[in-house]
Image 1 (cartoon, each protein chain N blue to C red):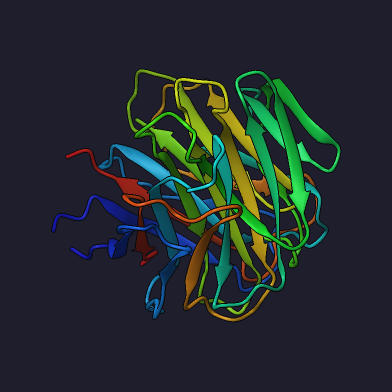
Image 2 (image 1 turned 30 degrees about the vertical axis):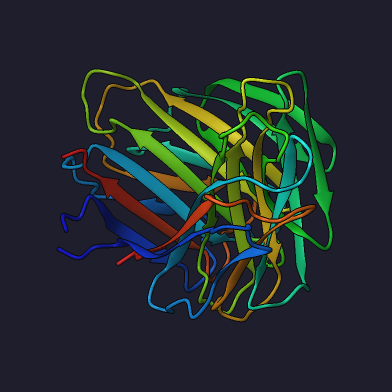
Length: 169
Length: 162
């Protein structure tokens, strides 16, 4: 029986952190991609925004975010950055790493690429945030590289991100 | 490696259509996952609807948390003939929709669907209920207007607990 949900690669951030988490040479043999992460930023704050880029490019990206903080709910959009999550920062509760997922459908098709994300950085304190995200890379190019960035910091040591490929047949 | 996440059926539209039905769903899985990738509408700004087993009665309800151009809101429908499971736009803002339908094949409980919808026009979390104890054997997508556009992809996966 065919395995249709397969791990492509896991990146674990080492000593000193990483400016971004990168997946290159992504095989073109799946239908969709799924990223699952446990992450934390080095930003000196309770949290940091996470954004995604494809194929080393920073253009044609946009997003909309819906989030709740435990005391309120709000949203925002961005016309140039594809935000895909909000994860713990360096002053968040020690040892807490946010969990989240990012789904990229039809990543090899010659159409605009939609991105769906959700995450939580529950930390037993104020500053916890729950998000769902919509992103867009308005490009017909196939996705062959993914980079995940922290907006105001780096990825902290012990963060890990796994890339899965999903086949629809 | 045992395959516990299996594609049941997939449709990539070769022409514009008003409805998409994924039928002959086997009862051999534990849960279902539905993915609409590059979901587009010929008109845009339409609600995305779901029905089960061809039931057109007023047996559906939903609650949704939505962020769009007008801000954030929560809405619901009761006694509806469809489940509102999202919103769908055009080619420059394709929908990524993921639904989970747990314990879909049991004949005792009503069926619940949990959805996440992502476009840059509208990001939302929906939950829907079908007040039927029947096992789900087909799922039909429709929209409040227009057609689903060419290239829209609808895929159903089955998940086995064991």
